[in-house]
Amino acid sequence: MGETASVVAFKVDVDTYVGTREGIPNLLKILRQFGVRATFYFSLGPDNSGKAVRRIFHPGFLKKMMRTRAPSMYGVRTMLYGTLLPAPAIAKDLAEVIASVKAAGHEVGIHCWDHVKWHDYLPRYDKKDVARELGLANGAFKVIFGAPAQTTAAPGWTVTADSLEVQDSMGLTYSSDSRGRCPFFPIMDGRSFRTLQIPSTWPTMDELLGENGITTETINAQYLQLLKPGLNVHTIHAELEGNALKEQFVDLLARLAQRTVRYIPLGEAAAEFGVGAPHCELRMGYVEGRAMPVAIQSSAEGETVQPCR
Ligand SMILES: [Zn+2]
Image (cartoon, rainbow, N blue to C red; front, side, top):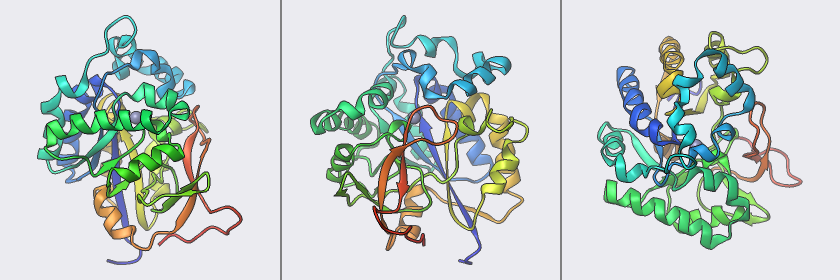
């Protein structure tokens, strides 16, 4: 493989009931059209989006979408789930949709049991709470796929040293919980972990839109500028690229098709780019365009930045 070839891995976060029911089939169709195999992370428990829908995407983004097509982006029902309407059980109700992702040749993993709960309460969780959430998710995952998950991706890129420790105990091949430059083994709060991290290297669409004058018309030119040789990891959402921002996602894939790009699921990226990965500090911090902190790869305390492979 030439040194200058660009490899792109799509990480698909599925946060909601509607994202599962509608966004997944839409994305499967688009990805098939472009011959892309991706990695999907499912929310498997109750959809309590109504409790936090304004926090999932940053306020500037929602404001912008309100002016354009917010009702089609999220739907009124999702905004009420867990509040005025009961929280629907995603894996229980939509097992066939979730199963169809693997049947279509994509890689599958756990996003969470309850997205809102993890995102809001993780810093207050002890190991038992984390193990309960991931255990419930893995139970639902096993019912659908017949085997435990090999990979997880934390909601909102929110981790703690305790959540990383529980993930270590799950025998995962790798996790994708962070933002950064290249695969690494995380060190957090002075604790070292053995589960390889494959960080997302690009900002998400909802982070870019509305920042620095970037619009749905100019966003893909921005992404093409970010495309670098080696591994690029891009997180997309079933709720956005699989729904209201579908056209922009198709346009991105059409533009990438003009370049020499190879697509691989994250599991193959772990095998190809994870060997000899450096140990790097992982800290919660802020990225442009997102209101809540995310896990960010940095160099270890007092050390210079270790090179990526
Ligand atoms: Zn999510």
